[in-house]
Length: 147
Image (cartoon, rainbow, N blue to C red; front, top):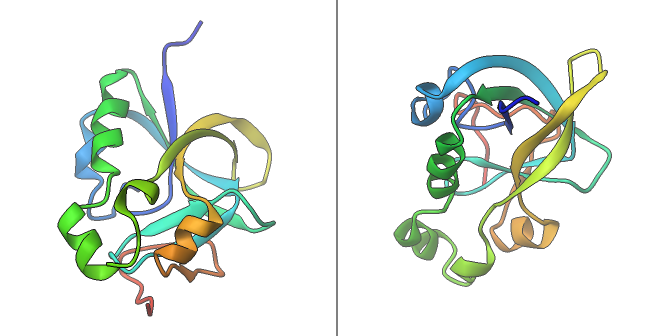
């Protein structure tokens, strides 16, 4: 039985993106992957994924050998409370956090390769946070998104 942990990332935690450093010390493998869902850019400067819709979200599966990686990332994936209240003062902080859930991931040829953890939101949360749909399903900090 494998003790490896797989996490699908689609935003600032991807290799080459500004927050990859948060998990880089834990990564033992990384490869491009696609997950069914819909991608949105949030006004905080990072994306959110929903599991609803027939789109594809492009990202990476990061593999960790240490369960501590998930604890570190669970804490990191919470919005900064001050920024949250400044950007979307009408939204309720506690009700608009990411949820870590198992999701099916595919390789770029769309063959299912495994189930991995992923940080997702509901459509209602994305709407409350004024998310902007990213039709390509591919988010990068280098792109400009208008919120």
